[in-house]
Length: 338
Image 1 (spheres, one colour):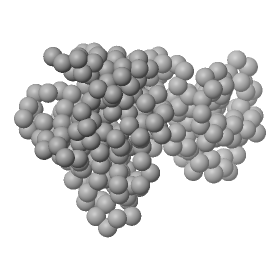
Image 2: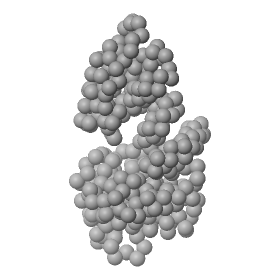
Image 3: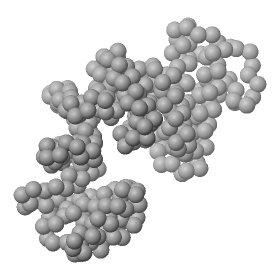
Image 4: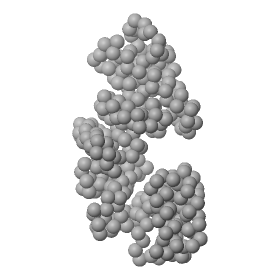
């Protein structure tokens, strides 16, 4: 094994260990030893910068890696394309980059379908393209068909994959097929539960599970959303989004029950007190961690003001007698995509 290969292996290990800072130090040495047509060190350098949120430096490293790989007959480095697709602002260029990454991943998967890392990355890339057609490219005439295509490709690899099922649920919600969305989310939750029990590598990332919770709230599966968010909070209690979603879930459920007249004032007030507790927790965590999301901060303050005007007591205070609440608010339309 050459000196460069040994260094590249060391960088890979640092990235797997979630140690991007040390990976950068090693990669900056390796790039000086790489041949002109070898973009691997730059690819890893870009990945490490991206993990640290240094997007400009990551873009420069990925661009150099792509440039060095242009004349290769078989480029095996898919990461640079997938990362660049995520961080550039041009949606059409993003789609082209995903396509290049998918071409490599599909070839690698065809060569060895047992490679779990390639399998997981391929499914994730299919889901990312589907999400792109649901968001930035949603105005294209073929958007719905393309979204359906890439979602199905992800599910064909593994129909129990939680990320693919979450993407399916998101697509069904956008199509207003709420019962089908609920069914996909139930399967998704089962997949998450199985992976958690088995301590499997199939356990979706924290971010994906948080997105699942958002969808559960959207289709009014409030208890399932609460249970998942509590689990996430136990895993890491310094994520503002989770505190926020716990509060939002209680607030939306209380609002829905009030509008339908399907619960007692005591039950509704209990939900609002819980909502206030979680929103206060979100605010405290935001300040403690110096979180950077002005949108979510403003919405937290907005809902806390609404709860104050409704006379909702702090969780530790003795609640007054149940009262009628005036729900004339547009707050439910202002939920932030944090």
